[in-house]
Image (cartoon, rainbow, N blue to C red):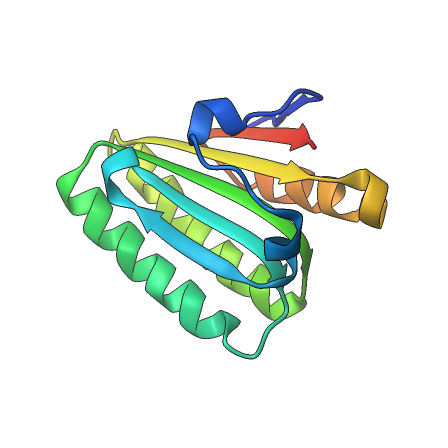
Length: 139
């Protein structure tokens, strides 16, 4: 799948929620069932990140059993190699769901102003593994 890089903000499409800049240094995973949305934000380097990724995978499994659509919004400021491993497992599961006919879309929002192009490049790398829609937005 080729990533779509946009310079405009995709917040309107994924959620009416807005992120506060101070929330970005905390790692959060929120499952918004009624919106068919999982939001992953902040610094994915915390000691409890593995717990949150495991819960995210459980939420994905449960959601896909009951629903046909899933959107995941990533706004990671920084991540480590452990997080990349969890994302790889999640992408593999989402590829299977897409092959089963589920509508999957990832929104990858990042700011090159704060950390250079690393998170944009990470998004491009992850998009290369995806068989479904993957949109990169520079915030």
